[in-house]
Image (cartoon, rainbow, N blue to C red; front, side, top):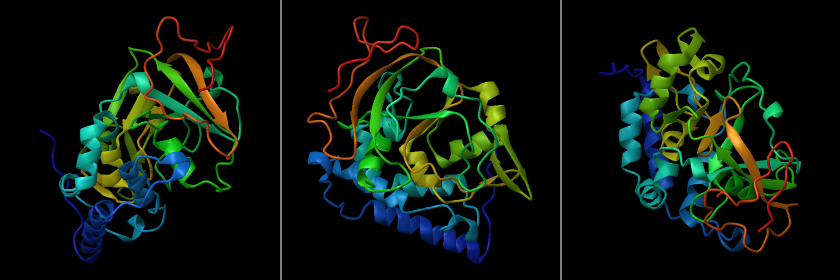
Length: 298
Protein backbone atom coordinates (compact mmCIF):
# COMPACT_ATOMS: atom_id res chain seq x y z
CA UNK A 1 0.00 0.00 0.00
CA UNK A 2 1.30 3.41 -0.96
CA UNK A 3 2.04 5.65 2.02
CA UNK A 4 0.08 8.88 1.91
CA UNK A 5 2.24 11.97 2.02
CA UNK A 6 1.02 14.81 4.16
CA UNK A 7 -0.10 18.09 2.67
CA UNK A 8 1.31 21.39 3.82
CA UNK A 9 -0.45 23.28 6.60
CA UNK A 10 -1.42 26.86 7.19
CA UNK A 11 -2.43 29.72 4.90
CA UNK A 12 -0.45 28.43 1.92
CA UNK A 13 -2.42 25.16 1.95
CA UNK A 14 -5.65 27.11 2.19
CA UNK A 15 -4.61 29.07 -0.92
CA UNK A 16 -3.87 25.83 -2.77
CA UNK A 17 -7.26 24.39 -1.85
CA UNK A 18 -8.99 27.57 -2.99
CA UNK A 19 -7.12 27.42 -6.30
CA UNK A 20 -8.09 23.76 -6.70
CA UNK A 21 -11.78 24.54 -6.18
CA UNK A 22 -11.51 27.45 -8.61
CA UNK A 23 -9.96 25.16 -11.21
CA UNK A 24 -12.82 22.69 -11.04
CA UNK A 25 -15.29 25.58 -11.31
CA UNK A 26 -13.42 27.01 -14.31
CA UNK A 27 -13.37 23.65 -16.08
CA UNK A 28 -17.10 23.22 -15.51
CA UNK A 29 -18.01 26.77 -16.55
CA UNK A 30 -19.81 27.31 -19.85
CA UNK A 31 -17.31 26.54 -22.63
CA UNK A 32 -16.51 29.13 -25.26
CA UNK A 33 -17.55 28.21 -28.82
CA UNK A 34 -14.61 26.58 -30.54
CA UNK A 35 -14.77 27.98 -34.08
CA UNK A 36 -11.22 27.32 -35.25
CA UNK A 37 -11.33 25.62 -38.67
CA UNK A 38 -14.95 24.63 -38.31
CA UNK A 39 -14.73 23.75 -34.62
CA UNK A 40 -12.30 22.00 -32.33
CA UNK A 41 -14.34 19.90 -29.93
CA UNK A 42 -15.84 22.46 -27.54
CA UNK A 43 -15.11 20.58 -24.31
CA UNK A 44 -11.56 19.85 -25.36
CA UNK A 45 -10.91 23.45 -26.40
CA UNK A 46 -12.29 24.71 -23.09
CA UNK A 47 -10.06 22.36 -21.08
CA UNK A 48 -7.02 23.54 -23.02
CA UNK A 49 -7.87 27.22 -22.48
CA UNK A 50 -8.32 26.74 -18.73
CA UNK A 51 -5.12 24.76 -18.18
CA UNK A 52 -3.00 26.88 -20.54
CA UNK A 53 -3.87 29.95 -18.47
CA UNK A 54 -1.90 28.44 -15.57
CA UNK A 55 1.70 29.27 -16.39
CA UNK A 56 5.00 28.67 -14.62
CA UNK A 57 5.33 31.03 -11.69
CA UNK A 58 1.68 32.05 -11.72
CA UNK A 59 0.60 30.25 -8.57
CA UNK A 60 2.29 27.01 -7.51
CA UNK A 61 5.43 28.44 -5.94
CA UNK A 62 3.37 30.62 -3.60
CA UNK A 63 1.13 27.83 -2.33
CA UNK A 64 1.52 24.83 -0.10
CA UNK A 65 1.74 21.24 -1.30
CA UNK A 66 -1.56 19.47 -1.79
CA UNK A 67 -2.05 15.83 -0.90
CA UNK A 68 -2.27 13.93 -4.18
CA UNK A 69 -5.48 12.18 -3.14
CA UNK A 70 -7.10 15.53 -2.35
CA UNK A 71 -6.26 16.91 -5.79
CA UNK A 72 -7.54 13.76 -7.49
CA UNK A 73 -10.78 13.71 -5.49
CA UNK A 74 -11.49 17.32 -6.43
CA UNK A 75 -10.99 16.67 -10.14
CA UNK A 76 -13.21 13.59 -9.96
CA UNK A 77 -16.07 16.05 -9.43
CA UNK A 78 -15.45 17.84 -12.73
CA UNK A 79 -18.38 17.34 -15.11
CA UNK A 80 -16.24 18.44 -18.06
CA UNK A 81 -13.66 15.74 -17.41
CA UNK A 82 -16.40 13.16 -16.99
CA UNK A 83 -17.87 14.08 -20.37
CA UNK A 84 -14.48 13.94 -22.06
CA UNK A 85 -13.58 10.66 -20.37
CA UNK A 86 -16.78 9.04 -21.62
CA UNK A 87 -15.85 9.94 -25.20
CA UNK A 88 -12.05 9.76 -25.11
CA UNK A 89 -10.96 7.50 -22.23
CA UNK A 90 -7.38 6.97 -23.40
CA UNK A 91 -6.81 10.73 -23.52
CA UNK A 92 -8.35 11.47 -20.11
CA UNK A 93 -7.40 8.47 -17.96
CA UNK A 94 -5.25 6.22 -20.16
CA UNK A 95 -3.78 3.85 -20.92
CA UNK A 96 -1.93 5.15 -23.95
CA UNK A 97 -3.52 4.43 -27.33
CA UNK A 98 -0.41 3.32 -29.19
CA UNK A 99 -2.20 3.42 -32.56
CA UNK A 100 -2.98 7.13 -32.40
CA UNK A 101 0.25 8.94 -31.43
CA UNK A 102 0.90 12.15 -33.33
CA UNK A 103 3.86 14.49 -33.34
CA UNK A 104 3.30 18.04 -34.61
CA UNK A 105 6.33 20.08 -35.56
CA UNK A 106 6.38 23.88 -35.49
CA UNK A 107 8.63 25.98 -37.69
CA UNK A 108 9.81 23.07 -39.81
CA UNK A 109 8.45 20.45 -42.17
CA UNK A 110 11.24 17.98 -41.42
CA UNK A 111 10.02 14.58 -40.17
CA UNK A 112 10.96 13.32 -36.73
CA UNK A 113 14.02 11.10 -36.77
CA UNK A 114 15.67 8.73 -34.34
CA UNK A 115 18.90 10.74 -34.40
CA UNK A 116 17.04 13.81 -33.15
CA UNK A 117 15.73 12.11 -30.01
CA UNK A 118 18.73 12.53 -27.76
CA UNK A 119 18.65 11.27 -24.17
CA UNK A 120 16.93 13.74 -21.85
CA UNK A 121 19.13 16.14 -20.00
CA UNK A 122 18.60 18.11 -16.82
CA UNK A 123 15.12 18.92 -15.62
CA UNK A 124 13.69 22.39 -16.23
CA UNK A 125 13.17 23.82 -12.76
CA UNK A 126 10.21 25.86 -14.00
CA UNK A 127 8.16 23.14 -15.73
CA UNK A 128 9.51 19.75 -14.49
CA UNK A 129 10.06 18.73 -18.12
CA UNK A 130 13.50 17.97 -19.59
CA UNK A 131 15.51 21.04 -20.57
CA UNK A 132 16.46 19.20 -23.73
CA UNK A 133 16.02 15.82 -25.34
CA UNK A 134 13.07 13.50 -25.66
CA UNK A 135 10.11 13.80 -28.03
CA UNK A 136 6.48 14.63 -27.23
CA UNK A 137 3.39 13.10 -28.82
CA UNK A 138 -0.32 13.59 -28.20
CA UNK A 139 -3.22 11.22 -28.83
CA UNK A 140 -5.46 11.77 -31.86
CA UNK A 141 -8.96 11.88 -30.37
CA UNK A 142 -12.34 13.55 -30.83
CA UNK A 143 -11.66 14.25 -34.50
CA UNK A 144 -8.46 16.18 -33.83
CA UNK A 145 -4.76 15.75 -34.43
CA UNK A 146 -4.23 15.67 -30.67
CA UNK A 147 -4.27 18.22 -27.87
CA UNK A 148 -0.96 19.78 -28.90
CA UNK A 149 -2.36 20.50 -32.36
CA UNK A 150 -5.44 22.00 -30.68
CA UNK A 151 -3.18 24.12 -28.47
CA UNK A 152 -1.39 25.51 -31.54
CA UNK A 153 -4.69 26.32 -33.25
CA UNK A 154 -6.10 28.02 -30.16
CA UNK A 155 -2.90 30.09 -29.81
CA UNK A 156 -2.58 30.98 -33.47
CA UNK A 157 -0.35 34.02 -33.87
CA UNK A 158 1.98 33.10 -31.01
CA UNK A 159 5.64 33.69 -31.81
CA UNK A 160 6.71 30.76 -29.59
CA UNK A 161 5.57 28.10 -32.08
CA UNK A 162 5.55 29.64 -35.56
CA UNK A 163 4.22 27.85 -38.65
CA UNK A 164 4.62 25.85 -40.73
CA UNK A 165 3.01 23.12 -38.65
CA UNK A 166 3.25 19.53 -39.80
CA UNK A 167 1.49 16.53 -38.27
CA UNK A 168 3.02 13.06 -38.29
CA UNK A 169 1.65 9.75 -37.06
CA UNK A 170 4.27 7.66 -35.24
CA UNK A 171 4.08 3.87 -35.34
CA UNK A 172 4.75 2.97 -31.68
CA UNK A 173 6.56 -0.30 -31.05
CA UNK A 174 4.21 -2.79 -29.35
CA UNK A 175 6.82 -3.61 -26.71
CA UNK A 176 7.58 0.02 -25.81
CA UNK A 177 7.67 0.44 -22.02
CA UNK A 178 5.32 3.26 -21.02
CA UNK A 179 4.82 4.61 -17.50
CA UNK A 180 1.25 5.81 -17.05
CA UNK A 181 0.61 9.01 -15.07
CA UNK A 182 -3.17 9.27 -14.86
CA UNK A 183 -3.55 11.24 -11.62
CA UNK A 184 -1.76 13.39 -9.07
CA UNK A 185 -1.16 10.20 -7.08
CA UNK A 186 0.59 8.68 -10.11
CA UNK A 187 2.71 11.83 -10.48
CA UNK A 188 3.72 11.60 -6.82
CA UNK A 189 4.56 7.91 -7.30
CA UNK A 190 6.76 8.73 -10.30
CA UNK A 191 8.64 11.27 -8.20
CA UNK A 192 9.01 8.72 -5.41
CA UNK A 193 10.59 6.34 -7.91
CA UNK A 194 12.83 8.67 -9.94
CA UNK A 195 12.70 12.02 -8.17
CA UNK A 196 15.74 14.06 -7.34
CA UNK A 197 15.76 17.25 -5.38
CA UNK A 198 17.10 19.54 -2.77
CA UNK A 199 15.57 21.46 0.09
CA UNK A 200 12.58 19.13 0.14
CA UNK A 201 11.55 19.91 -3.48
CA UNK A 202 11.63 17.00 -5.92
CA UNK A 203 11.75 17.06 -9.70
CA UNK A 204 11.88 14.11 -12.08
CA UNK A 205 15.30 12.70 -12.87
CA UNK A 206 14.63 12.00 -16.52
CA UNK A 207 17.91 10.18 -16.98
CA UNK A 208 16.86 7.74 -14.27
CA UNK A 209 13.39 7.50 -15.83
CA UNK A 210 14.94 6.59 -19.20
CA UNK A 211 16.66 3.63 -17.55
CA UNK A 212 13.23 2.24 -16.62
CA UNK A 213 10.82 3.29 -19.38
CA UNK A 214 10.74 4.32 -23.01
CA UNK A 215 8.03 6.89 -22.46
CA UNK A 216 5.90 8.58 -19.80
CA UNK A 217 2.24 9.18 -20.65
CA UNK A 218 0.62 12.08 -18.76
CA UNK A 219 -3.17 12.06 -19.19
CA UNK A 220 -5.51 15.03 -19.25
CA UNK A 221 -6.84 14.16 -15.79
CA UNK A 222 -3.28 14.14 -14.42
CA UNK A 223 -2.55 17.50 -16.08
CA UNK A 224 -5.70 19.00 -14.56
CA UNK A 225 -4.77 17.71 -11.09
CA UNK A 226 -1.12 18.85 -11.12
CA UNK A 227 -0.78 21.88 -13.41
CA UNK A 228 0.84 24.55 -11.26
CA UNK A 229 0.35 22.64 -8.00
CA UNK A 230 3.04 21.30 -5.70
CA UNK A 231 2.07 17.77 -4.68
CA UNK A 232 3.10 16.25 -1.36
CA UNK A 233 5.44 13.26 -1.49
CA UNK A 234 7.11 11.39 1.34
CA UNK A 235 10.41 13.16 0.78
CA UNK A 236 8.87 16.64 0.66
CA UNK A 237 6.96 18.12 -2.27
CA UNK A 238 6.96 17.57 -6.01
CA UNK A 239 7.69 20.82 -7.79
CA UNK A 240 4.73 22.21 -9.77
CA UNK A 241 4.49 20.66 -13.22
CA UNK A 242 3.31 22.37 -16.42
CA UNK A 243 2.37 19.78 -19.04
CA UNK A 244 -0.49 21.92 -20.47
CA UNK A 245 -1.96 19.09 -22.56
CA UNK A 246 -2.14 15.30 -22.60
CA UNK A 247 1.29 14.16 -23.72
CA UNK A 248 3.69 11.27 -23.90
CA UNK A 249 7.31 12.17 -23.34
CA UNK A 250 9.39 9.63 -25.26
CA UNK A 251 12.79 9.14 -23.68
CA UNK A 252 14.13 7.17 -26.62
CA UNK A 253 13.10 6.35 -30.18
CA UNK A 254 10.57 3.47 -30.10
CA UNK A 255 8.84 3.87 -33.45
CA UNK A 256 8.81 1.68 -36.53
CA UNK A 257 8.18 4.57 -38.89
CA UNK A 258 6.30 7.81 -39.39
CA UNK A 259 3.57 8.96 -41.77
CA UNK A 260 2.99 12.56 -42.73
CA UNK A 261 -0.66 13.59 -42.29
CA UNK A 262 -0.57 17.19 -43.42
CA UNK A 263 1.22 20.52 -43.29
CA UNK A 264 -0.06 24.08 -43.17
CA UNK A 265 1.44 27.52 -42.77
CA UNK A 266 -0.88 29.12 -40.25
CA UNK A 267 -3.52 29.96 -42.82
CA UNK A 268 -6.57 27.79 -43.42
CA UNK A 269 -5.93 24.19 -42.43
CA UNK A 270 -6.53 21.29 -44.83
CA UNK A 271 -10.20 20.75 -45.64
CA UNK A 272 -10.41 17.48 -43.68
CA UNK A 273 -7.71 17.90 -41.05
CA UNK A 274 -9.12 15.72 -38.32
CA UNK A 275 -10.40 12.32 -39.45
CA UNK A 276 -10.48 9.50 -36.93
CA UNK A 277 -7.07 7.99 -37.57
CA UNK A 278 -6.54 4.26 -37.70
CA UNK A 279 -3.40 2.29 -37.06
CA UNK A 280 -1.04 2.04 -40.05
CA UNK A 281 -1.82 -1.23 -41.77
CA UNK A 282 0.49 -3.42 -43.84
CA UNK A 283 -0.26 -1.35 -46.95
CA UNK A 284 -0.02 2.08 -45.30
CA UNK A 285 2.38 4.54 -46.84
CA UNK A 286 4.71 4.70 -43.85
CA UNK A 287 7.70 7.04 -44.09
CA UNK A 288 10.56 4.85 -42.95
CA UNK A 289 13.71 6.63 -41.92
CA UNK A 290 15.71 4.77 -44.53
CA UNK A 291 14.24 4.60 -48.01
CA UNK A 292 11.44 6.88 -46.81
CA UNK A 293 8.21 7.46 -48.69
CA UNK A 294 5.56 9.87 -47.46
CA UNK A 295 1.83 9.32 -47.15
CA UNK A 296 -0.59 11.46 -49.08
CA UNK A 297 -1.77 14.57 -47.28
CA UNK A 298 -5.38 14.62 -46.17
